[in-house]
Image 1: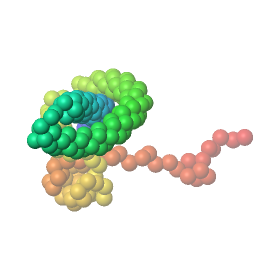
Image 2: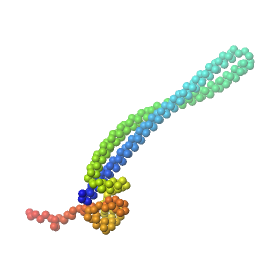
Image 3: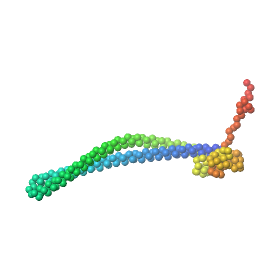
Image 4: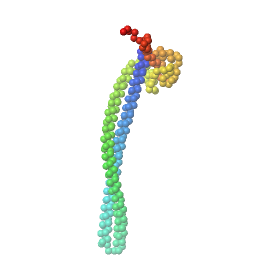
Length: 252
């Protein structure tokens, strides 16, 4: 294959690899967004679970305090019943003392129960609000996930097309140039660059006179500084100005 053709094929391969990297980057970005969206849905589910647990705990606290209050009322009723039939002063004094302690505990229980009911109402309100918000967020999240998955599938298919194109470009190169290209492409995104004003257009290393002469003959050389493959772009065809040697000489 002629050297200038090799340069063209290598440049074409660079263009395909640039598309490939951009596509892979788009896929990685989309997959990251998909993971973040799924994680956010998991967080929403945790919030719902936490709000339900808080409401359940508050409900249990109310139930326990109500049972304690009921038990305390039964004790009070029992002591008052005994006090009515007691005849000895010492027994009456003991029962009076127990009643005072029971009434004190009942007052404390009543205050705790009022606070527990307030907490339960707050937990119920917060749980309902969390679930309502979560329902909307979950619906939106699932729609977004579906679109992201569809987009990733589309990007994957486009990448397959690019890979087919890349394989075609590789098949146009001989094994030696392919290996040299892949070796350089593994470290830089532009493994082959033109030489401009006898300098590497990537690292600006000045080519030697001998290398410059070889490049002018259409050779492809490795830069002695950055090791990229160098080539000399063919100059555009010169056009003669109209009105001189290049004018149309046809007679009217």
